[in-house]
Image 1 (cartoon, helix red, strand yellow):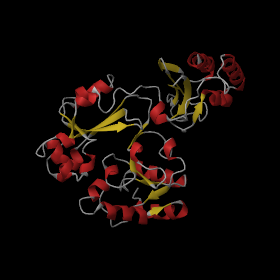
Image 2 (tube, rainbow, N blue to C red; image 1 turned 180 degrees about the vertical axis):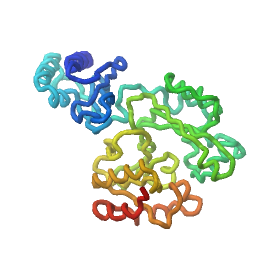
Image 3 (tube, rainbow, N blue to C red; image 1 turned 30 degrees about the vertical axis):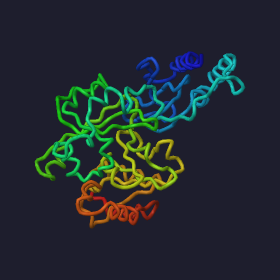
Image 4 (cartoon, rainbow, N blue to C red; image 1 turned 60 degrees about the vertical axis):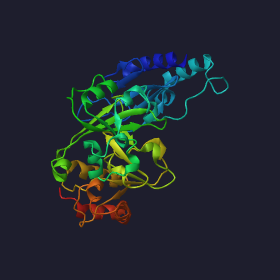
Length: 351
């Protein structure tokens, strides 16, 4: 019953929501009425109503706000909120009934999609784990060349036709040819795959391979702006490092990678209250990374600002000349926040 009540009141509120539309049966989209979305681009709509369990929740991928439908209506339409609460109460859905409220508002595990497959499903069976390949195989050699720890070979995959495989996860994705790729699946805490990244394999020498390789990311639900790689294997009670690339996250203990758009400082719910250090790529001439760093410092986040002696772009480049422990020590020694971060940032940036 709550599903139909929620949908009814979303439709009632939709008249005051700019660019509102149902993208599918249990996913609606609109311009965020809380932050106003974009002042420059009036066509941007980054607010989403999504179904989790029997209920709908609201999430904005611009300001990061996440609400139950009750809290959303309380913010944008107090009169509708009263009617909504009364109708839910009449349906017997209150704290004293047998109605079970969903646990938390977990964007990563709870958006409207149902994951298309699990680790042992037919779709993953179309791929081959790196650990199951012959050591002479191109993909296996590529992982060895990149110094990826062998303990992760059981969660990295190979396909000789990434284009066909990715369309099984997202039939509406852009057409990609029959390319050999390293496949990096993104799992949620239940072991469901919610997205994947494919990396083109190349052996024109290490330097050429590093720069000619291209990534393609595919998601089971396009409403998710950001995917978190490794979220299911980090301990939030310890310091967590946040890097940009999934492969970079495999070298330093308790590290995750963020992939996709969205406000960079907005963390997943699982990391709320955790000591987090952002370790962005060492690209002081990259305007986007410089802007990200600037924004993180303004939000008083802890950031690693690479010292001038480090010439490599990222951790996977550094691993050729340094051990993982050495790199972690460099990160810890060069982690700053507040005014100290601002001073080091001015010396680091080149744009």
